Image: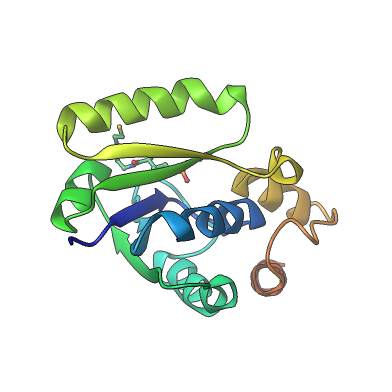
Length: 167
Ligand code: PNS
């Protein structure tokens, strides 16, 4: 039987507990999930691609469960091309609220046009993370607000280090 392989693409700048919730929900569905960190030179991220990948590699063993392999990789260019290169059958995306749907639907349809054999699989994030986004976490944290429980502790530590360096 062939391997059920999915990619979970995103910016992960930084990883949130919402992302982890989606990865946990994907574990029983696939044999292998590649967490694909987008290298987007147009954006000015808080963390470099290397830093984002390193955090993911440190944190993911904590949620690993069952047989599904979790792999961290980075990519540039089109998600659909990366998924094909990796021989993935699915692209996993999380949906938090109806407001995500329109953007996600457009992406899924475009990706399907580019790669008709690769399905996008939408998973619903837990309600408690329905308002959690990387951008909101960065903003609240940078302005001194509390984000514990919404991002992994390691990410919070790394954000504090970043902030202290730039002050
Ligand atoms: O975590 P994000 O920022 O919501 O992830 C968005 C991401 C990386 C999935 C999306 O921007 C993407 O796929 N970018 C790669 C370029 C691409 O394939 N664009 C066309 C999508 S239809």
